[in-house]
Length: 206
Image 1 (cartoon, one colour):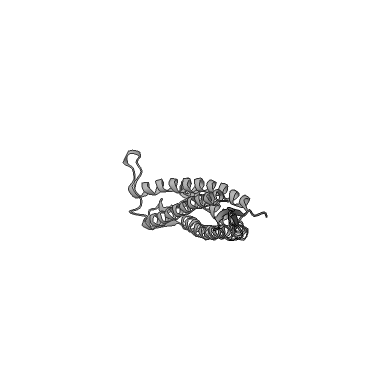
Image 2: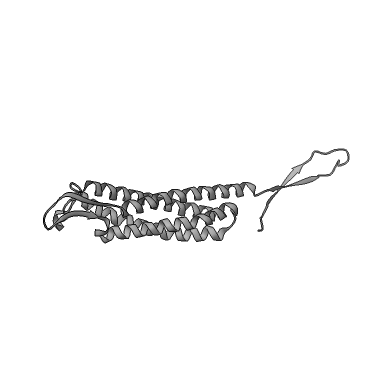
């Protein structure tokens, strides 16, 4: 690994002495700036990247497990009907679980690459790879969270124009859990956006 060093030359005028009387003497002092401070900055960015990935992993896992285990059955039923609400009743919530599960798996697999970025702060290839994949996951998790948020809104408020009934007055536990899952997914998406910005800044200063 080749490291570049910045050199600076400074011209210093020295007053005349007996030995240099009548002569104009210019001494040039050369100073070398070591890149250690830049390496420390990149290592700090790498450590922050690792911490953010763990936080995003926690948020994505919380969204996946909360939504994937959401199921409520009302205590009353008729001879022909049993009132039950489950996440897999709606394809949007199923997509939400799959998307956040994929994001969780990706974050687990990205942790070793993040550690390599800490050990080798000048490795630009790894940062570029993570930047591209993080950008893809931003779109993926945001789409899942936004779609689920629309369904949660209808569950809370309904829509008389399309005959959507507000079910949260009956299925309170169901609505609370899916709402919490959506919030956790938006948190994961926000962390992904911050990771993209952080990687872009680190590559720009590489």
